[in-house]
Structure formats: structure tokens, C-alpha cells
Image 1 (cartoon, helix red, strand yellow):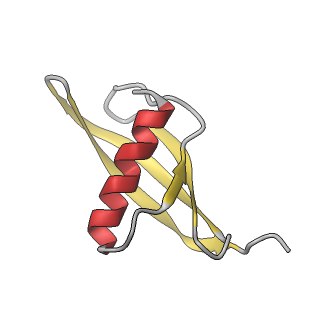
Image 2 (cartoon, rainbow, N blue to C red; image 1 turned 180 degrees about the vertical axis):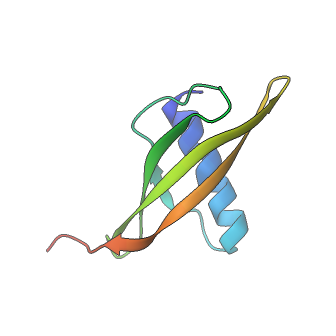
Amino acid sequence: MSADKLATIVTEKLAATAEEPKPDINCPENLTANVGTTTRCKLTAKDGSTWGVTVKVTSIEGDQTNFDIETDETTSPAAN
């Protein structure tokens, strides 16, 4: 899955889960559709702080790739 497509999917899933507007997500690399494969993305909040986001492929059903999304518990403050 391309990095851009992954970022779009992660954005939509996080927005739906948090019932908040879509966050700014950047995924720097493509995600290979193999169970257990992981990649890291970055969420940038409106105040400029950033959160790490881990995406892990959990299953593949035909053309559908399913994955877990986990946001880090700590944030990096916005640059001054």
C-alpha cells in the first residue's frame, strides 16, 4: 500500500475513532501487505505538537488489508 493511501486511511480511521476532525497524518514509507508488517506515521496536531503512530497489518482478506493503529502515549511539543 502506498504511503499516501496509508496516510489517508489512518487519517479517516483516527477521525472516526476520536469523533474529531481529520488529523494531519504523514506516513513516510509504503506498507507491505504481509501480516505482522509495521510502519510508523506521524500525526501533527493543530498546535504543532506531534504524535507517533504505529500501523501493523493484522490480516488480509482478498484485496482488503486490515491493520491496527496505535498512537504513542506521549507527544513531542511544537517547535518554537
